Structure formats: structure tokens, C-alpha cells
Amino acid sequence: MNDERYTWRHNSVLFEIHKVIQSHVAERNACVVNESLPHISTSFVPAGKPPTKSIKKLHSGLIAGSNDWKVLVDLPDSKYVFPPEIFATLERPDIVIWSGKLRKVLLIELTCPSEENIEVAQLRKQTRYLQLMDQITSNTNWSPSLYTIEVGARGFIAHSLERTFLRLGISRRILSKVCKRVSIIAARCSFAIYMSANSLTIIWDKNRSLITLDAYFFLLLELMCLPVLFCAHALFFQII
Image 1 (cartoon, helix red, strand yellow):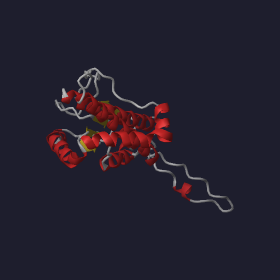
Image 2 (cartoon, rainbow, N blue to C red):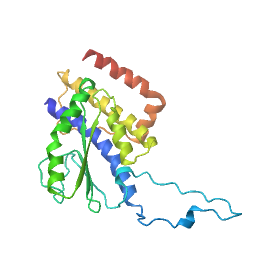
Image 3 (tube, rainbow, N blue to C red):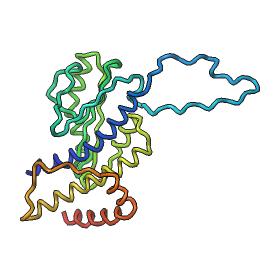
């Protein structure tokens, strides 16, 4: 029973993270990849003419250089099979991002442990996928990379989320919003788990919908409810 509740919390956080990554990859794929170098004349400003404004480059990070990136996520009701064109395995990383043109695959694994066990959880996931990384490197011409993300059960966001998102090319403005949303989702899930575990009347529904934050609810939290919500969660977590 506890495993189902923890999986529900994990999937709620994963849904939010995947939504942002999927949007970023779609934005990247919509851009035309310019593989040719600009002519040297574009580096000089003719006499008597003002310099032209430089075009702001799209943050692309690890997914630069191609527009055929695909994303796979291990969420309920998703037909998840690790891409067979990369490697045949029964392992199921939470998120897989890959490009056939570049022969690159990024594995992202999420864990939602207690804040005291974040470092242990990170090491455990890195060890778990070490063999898969070696197999892909040794037996294929694909280049794999593994990134772990840890979000504490009480809403603490480990540096691994920031590090992974920035390497993907996601802007700090979006990252800041994601951290707030993910933190609230994790805390709300843990609050629900705690209340159901200590209640004789609440029956846990294994088909319970994942927790999401719509724009209106999140706006209210930012304007007036966020401090109160965190204080309420803190009081209950002190009891645990």
C-alpha cells in the first residue's frame, strides 16, 4: 500500500517535470538547424553604418545540433518501451530523450526520497543504470548520458534538478517556476499520504488522479496562500 502512495507522489512530480521538458524539446525541434557557418563579412560593420542587433540565440544545451529529438516518459497508461533502436533492455528510466541523427540518448531518473536520504537515493540510481550505460556504450554507436533528479518528500529541491534543466538549455526563468511548482506538488502529495496513513476513515484510492497545479490555483498560492500552506505542511511534518 505504501509503495502505491509513494509511486503516486513520484508520478505527480514526474508529470510536471516531463511537461516542461516536452515543451522545451518541441520548441527546439521547431527551430531550423543551421549547420553552415556564417560568412566572414557578417562579422564586420561597414563604415558609416550602425552595428546590427544580434539575434538572441535559443537556449538549446544538450539538445543542440538537431531537430529530431524524441521524448519518452514512464507514466501510468503510457506504452513505455525503451527505444529498441538504441538498445534492447527491460530497464525503464523515467524520461528518455534521444536523437537519431546525433546518436545521442539522455536518461533522466527521478527519485522522491526523504530529505535525509537524497544523497543515498542519487547514488542508488546512478549505480542501477551503470550497467545499461556501459552496454549502450560498448555495443552500439549511441552516446548515452545519465542525469538523476531528486525532489524531497517535504518539497526540498536538490541541486540536481537545476543542474539537469540548465544543461538541457531550459532558462532560469522557467526553472524558477518549475522548482516552485514541483516543491508544492511533492509537499501536497506527502500531506495527503500522511493524512490517509493516520486516518481510520480515509481509504486510499490506488487509481487516484495525479496532483497538478492549474494556473489559477498557482497564482493564488503565489499571491496569498503560499506561506500559510508551507506552515501547515511544516507543522504536520514535524509530527512525523
